[in-house]
Amino acid sequence: MIEVDLQAIQEVNDEGLRRLIHDHLKVFVKFTSENCAICNALALPFAKFADGAAYQPILFLKLNADQNPVAKKLMDQHVAPFFVSYCQGRLLECDVLTKEADVRAQLDRLRAFAPVKA
Image (cartoon, rainbow, N blue to C red; front, side, top):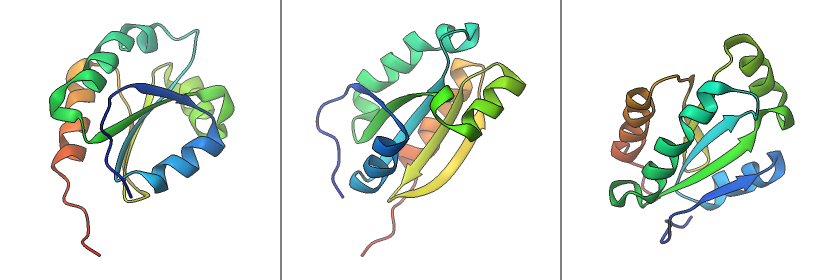
């Protein structure tokens, strides 16, 4: 597993997501939809987090919820982005978030999570 050197939000599909969560130590994913006002409102804070030095070891991904059945169902029910944290290929946390502070809190928990040593 590798840690990320340069920050950028990568847009991926389900296949890319499965590969990247196993290739990188820590991954934070935003499942989003073009017609989601909350998704659009959180786009700038998500980009700022991705560029922030505090979150440099985390790989930031964005996936269209229409490409993932579970995320699409949640988006249809809550009309808000779905965020997922992974460490060492394992899901740590997932939630529908509507506020920048909640996204930051989930990111801070991922950043603080101590990976299992091999």
